[in-house]
Length: 382
Image (cartoon, rainbow, N blue to C red; front, side):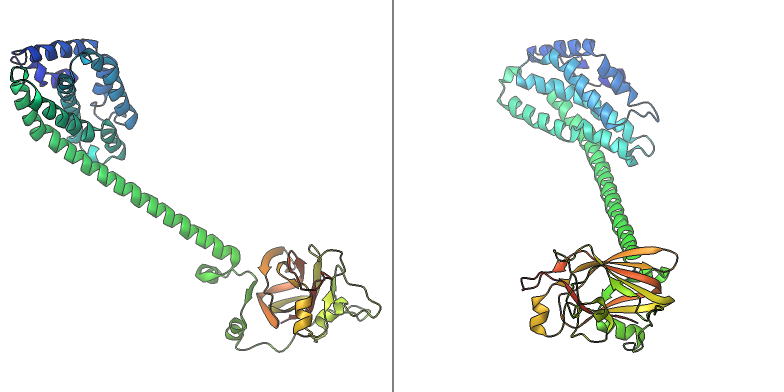
């Protein structure tokens, strides 16, 4: 394998030693050839049919052992003759790549394309070729190497240029496939992510196809379109034996006249309000509603804050982010919903069976007043 390719190196030409410069090169190349060991092994196993060693790691080994075993033999030569020696050995690596390219389907393999790219003949050969020609032109006539020049021109034209062009093309195709693979992979991640998001939020085409939905804040127009107008009949709230409505708040701002009781949330009057009675803004507390039996709830309406008038609305805190926990009789599902800091009704689309539900306060919009009290004027269930 390598031995056969070395027979085509310039220093093996019978006339290579006709000049003093040629003799120096031949002595150095003979010394390099005698020192080869691991370079020969790494080189030869890359040419074995179906061998796994056509990979970037072994290409790195070939270059490493070339620098370790061959290069020291011609380090004492001047720069021009060192270029001669390197180009002579590079011709063997180019023949290796030529032979690999002739193997069926090897150029299509990403691993082999990376092997060829790692050997870097597309940069190493042109660089040393240009530097040699520059130095050869300046060399004294007696030191020139016309025989090497003829060999180099033919090797560059018939071997180097075609081999480098072929592997550049293979590398470009490999990079293109890799890029396409990354794009396809990224697109798949985006599609899967979007599908998971639609399933999680219950929104989008996939959620509609699968019949999956999650409660979410929607505009009044959405309610009107979905139901052909706002529903007018409020879903009955369970009545206890003592006649009280089955809903409550876990905290209430206590007053002598009970003006902030939780009953204000469902009295049909947005001028009254429930207010929390905590030292902070009431975050972590909850409102509880028990529907009469398990019923299908279309949507909730929340009148956020105390909507007695604009000044009052601005004075007190309003709900911001809440957790809507719905129990359908068999399981509880939590959904995070961010309400708006606006007067008027806000609609939360439900569209599922509900046995009971909780509105848990996570964050609030801080009012302009100093009381730091959070209010809700009304909650309606349709």
